[in-house]
Image 1: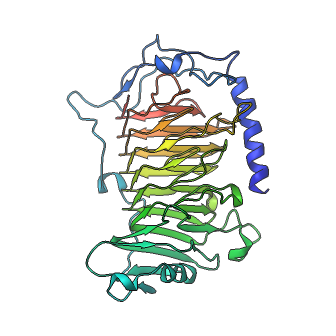
Image 2: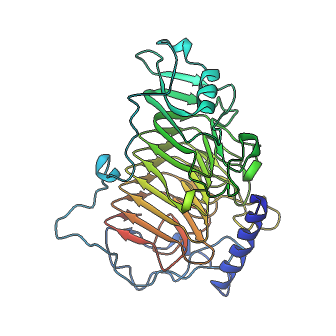
Length: 397
């Protein structure tokens, strides 16, 4: 099914699912839900519904229950960071024997053209741009060829790829015939494996790039497998409106065998999009470890499905996810100072068939306002999925 059709189905399902959740429009709940701090027992007097924008329905609150994994007396609930959170799940890839080296030891030798060529050729890619930080302003989007088994891009902590505020930086789409069809099941194939590590992506902008739904100002990925380690994303953009369009930094639409996208020890700052000021996906699982998301904004208006007279969007200040059976794990991560004009100032999570799950552990979500709605008892989070979000040794306020 083409993505446009898929988005239509998801939007219809979400309309029905949310409509079933309530008998009327909630009012005022988002401003009165108590903060969830550490592994506390949620107050039995907590509001029973989340405040949705006018025209939307309410979602039953979590009720009274104890968060799992309560610490022993005196134990700390500070987020785990760095390698503590990363564990063995997504280590960096060795670049000791690169297939391609961009540059010849000087900043001037590290060009947009060289990046585009190396990414198209595939393999392990490193940079030799001199001993100091360098910014490469991309004159064209670097596109992964679907014939590549893997593409590993490692900047050694010194390289910034910039979209100059006018273009997307990195693109992978296994269902884009322009990048070569390699299987009859493009939405579920094991390659290419795209690994980005020790890189900075700045000022990417995918506005107007609507093939397969758009989004992904810095990185767009449909298919294969994606992993991001020890990297930084700042000042990225995508379209300012659209009910299901998102991911100022990263947009992902499918992954091989529903394996998760790994985001490890990575920061996201000052991203702006209709939805998902940092990350966005449809039907994709995520494992986000030891990372930080600050100052990202979802700026669309009208939510999803779009209210009459609006273009839709505005949910998931940092993270926007939609789909059916998928999971999101946020581990050892700090999400602060993000915002949404509609729902979920930090995280928007909708599983249309209520099979998806959200897990937040050893993390801190603080000061992520949403002008419209969130799930009662989970400040900054809007959740429609199986049960309630699992919160372990974390602070939500």
